[in-house]
Length: 81
Image (cartoon, rainbow, N blue to C red; front, side, top):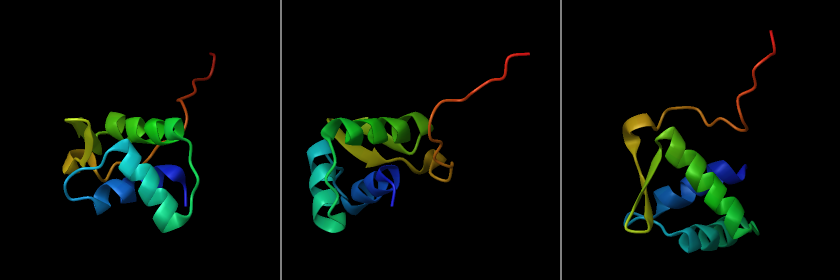
C-alpha cells in the first residue's frame, strides 16, 4: 500500500479529524509502517491540493467534494515543441 493511500485511510478512521501525529501513529499501529513526519505531511498536502482533505483547526478532515478524483503522483511533464 502506498503512503498516500494509507494516509487517506488514517484520516477516514478518525471521525473527529486527525492530526499529523495521529496519522503517524495509525500507520505504525495498523500497517506497521515507519514513516517520516515530512512524508506524511507531503501526502496530506497532496490530498488537500486534490480537494480530498481539508485542514481546519490543525486537524485533517475528509472533504467528499472531489473524493473520487484519482491520486496523481509527481509533477506534470510537458514536452518541448
